[in-house]
Each structure stands twice: as structure tokens, then as C-alpha cells.
Image (tube, rainbow, N blue to C red; front, side, top):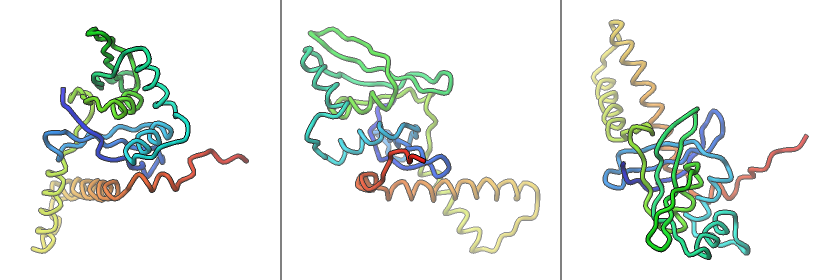
Length: 194
């Protein structure tokens, strides 16, 4: 298990779905993206931005309920991936006893943030993206472009295509790094009625 923290939330340019970007607490070059729902993203953004609401929202209500029952969230973990869905666990602690609750990762993370509890994930379950390697690839591409290297073989073409995908991925990462929680507050996530 790897301990991670919330880096930021971006939007998938194709589907418009929020992407939760988790980063390894010991090496921020490693990013673990997870696609989540809009209301779950909103809960994370509000908590990260420190925005207080006049009445408790769902995750705050859940936190209050857990505390009233004499428990706390000890940690959360993303443990598996089945049927196109990530599986998470919320580990509660009450009177020295651990209680494990099945959860979606976005709900577990929302609660972890409210309890300042650590977030873990099984590194074999969530695909890791190495930002350092992406940056090095882009630097190599730029150096080759400056040297005037052209595509001459099928292997060169394959590498150029792979490098293009890497470049697009880096541009997407840069876009995600620039998005702030306030940007989501300005968006209207309600479905348009016809």
C-alpha cells in the first residue's frame, strides 16, 4: 500500500467527468488518477478550499454521525478494481476496535479529508503516472527537434507517435495543475432541462 494525498481535481476533456489526482506522499512525481462523480468532486473541492456551508452537506453529516456514535475514521484505502469500478474501504475505529466499511474511493476520500485521516491505495490497482519521466521525454523530444532529426524508419514513426501521446498527456497534466477549487465553484453542474 502507498500513502497518497489529494493533489487536485481536473476535468476529463472528452467526458467532462472530474478526475481526482492523488499523489504519493513520499514522491510527488507519482500521480494516481481516478475518475469520480461531480457531487463527490464538489465535496472534495469545498473541503480543500475551506468553504463553510450554513448547513452540513452529506459528507459533513456523515462525519457528525460517525463522531456521535463514538467512532472516527482511522484511515481509508483503495484496495481493488472490479467490474470497471474501484473498491475502497473506510476503516473506522471505535473503542479500540476497527470496523471496515465498503465504499467508493471518492466517498472514502471525502471522509478521510474531514477526519484528517491517511489515504492509502494498492499500487497494483490504480495506474501510476510518472511526471518526471513525462518531463524527461518532452525534454528529449525538444532536443531532437532542435537537432533537426527526422522520422526515417517505422521505429522512428512509432516513437514519434508515442512521444506525441506523451506530449499531449503532459499538456493535459499542466492544465490540471492550473485548475483551482474556485474554478469549480463558478461552474454550474446541474443538468440542463429541455
